[in-house]
Length: 97
Length: 440
Image (cartoon, rainbow over all chains, first blue to last red; front, side):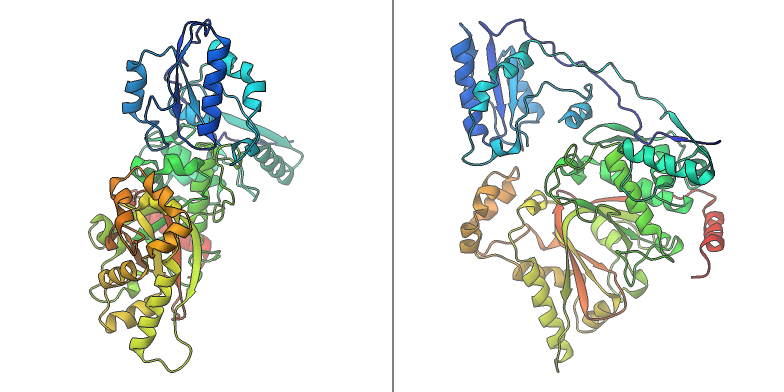
């Protein structure tokens, strides 16, 4: 038999931080949306907002446009700071395709 | 999405609710948002990453066995395809011996970090480049160009983080200036964007860059890159400017765009999303002046198109790269044209009437652009396809024949230059190449 040993070309990934912990329940929580306004987000995210408000007592879902919208701005540090300052317990980001 | 998540330092995993593409189209049925609402709720409350913490470190070694050298080589190739490390063409397995040989062309230590490859965030080193170049059939004297190109690619100003995943099929274009082009047999003449057995450097370097985009960056078709078509992606585009045929007074591209000293070896990296051959010369009894002017108008006509991805480079990038053969450049220079006056002409004559922009729905794209300069350009009629004539890239390259020029349509938020560093052993590597590749 002939052996051929070679490098794995996929390299390594450096994990620098854990994912955000999940919340125990949505009832009574404050939820935000960060929208890129693409891929029917203008229809789908309001539908999801209405579903959340109907299904969980005491939930507060911020308006879809509470934070800057659009691909050019949703990944910025400024947007992240606004989300943190808003005091939301969780955030939903959409849409990607 | 998992690539993007990994690229910001999280485990390559995310709480996502995925739907078929049809739901994201205009007029779609969005009722699945309601029928699958529980998945959204679980993503906020119950989801846990399934991936254990990973760490940066040396790439592990893989071992295959075969009944013969040929069989082991074939099995290695099958394994690389199964692991999604290949491009469908035969690969050299990056054995320790071959990678060490390639690293003979390194001007930096093998472990020197160059950054992380977006969007997946694969840790990128000089050794990573050597592994990819080994797989792509490269040689050690090509490594300095690849390392410089990777440095430019990973510069945030290039826009690579977005373009790696985007649907617009962007591919990197690497233009080399300085003596290293001729030294490593990087083609600047006939067929310079295609295969050439006597000048194979561009194919290997570009293929290695593509393998890095895929293997470290995660740009797999339909998974990490949503490029509809992915043209030019087997080898990307890597060529040298034909400096030997630059007219007197014309400045090399690397000097003009990036300020590198004339005679210095450097690369310039931009992104393009299309390639067009333009028959520029006349067919009858044109005077030299008529032939030049008609050819210029024909080139501008090819550029006068609503290339909305090109908005990404409207302010600081480029609308595209125009390649003109040395013989044409010499003729035009004799008539008084310079690179600057060609740019001015193209900028003025590629403008699009506002009415044509409106009927094609372009204002909506311009209005949502992140650049204020781009948004404000909507007030201009006719609308210039780029903010400044200086953004056009004019490069002298191509075979010594006057008929055609070539337009690489831009999708390039920036144009990034890098000097090329060569190892002290470079002359010996060139001598080895002369021996291996035969007479020029």
